[in-house]
Length: 265
Image (cartoon, rainbow, N blue to C red; front, side, top):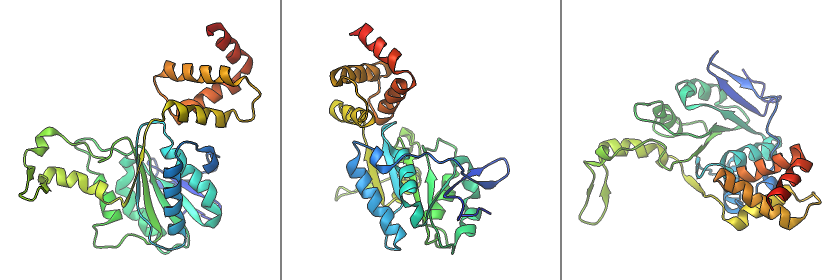
């Protein structure tokens, strides 16, 4: 059993079928996340409602990789742990153990977020049924002190195939009647009351994120801009993650970093 006064977060370990308290948390803060202000605002509002015992939704954060979905949940924990927020991370392979976990937290004074990172289900995987029941659909009501925050690169979480749409039809009023196979798969995503979309930032927003990381550095801003754009081109990815990696490359060896820039100028 986890001592929630000591630990703000825990992860489920398959090897022994138990939760393990997390000693070293990612120190990221909400103010460190730039370019996703609207997503941040809506998730903070939902979390504050949850902490105050008001109506709060399960949340699906979906979209492009490296855009801050997971970091936003980690930052929430750092901001609201003093108010009783706790985060428990499960991997999809371990969701069959979810009912036992729910039994242990039911009635606890803490407010728990079940964190499911990079959540997708391939054909043949059926552990998502445990998650569906935990959120809504079992004869037993879900714990009042639990909400699910999941991140994913896809909106419907479970892979769909063209053959499964064979039974889909359009009614006289234009309504769509999905085939049974598709209905089963999108039912999981439907249990998330709040969907937050994340997209790769445009050039201006990407540079704004870079500037945030370099805000305390005395460095030529035009040189910084060109180097940051070149770094993103090399990786074929313009995202918050790319901006952080660019900052870490500079921090590891500023002199070499600047020398490399001037060689390519």
